[in-house]
Length: 65
Image (cartoon, rainbow, N blue to C red; front, side, top):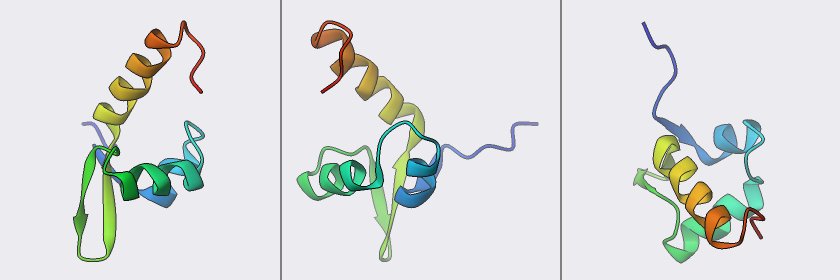
């Protein structure tokens, strides 16, 4: 059984070490972060975030900015 969730809070996502909490909050504010608000908490769709970052990396020649 898979115990990992497809949705994590911004703080939990930042703890994964993929991207900083500041960058995640900036993306959420700009409407660029895949996920949704549940009350006051933003839930990040982790698989979609990874796809988005991979696509950004590919566009930038393997160097995400």
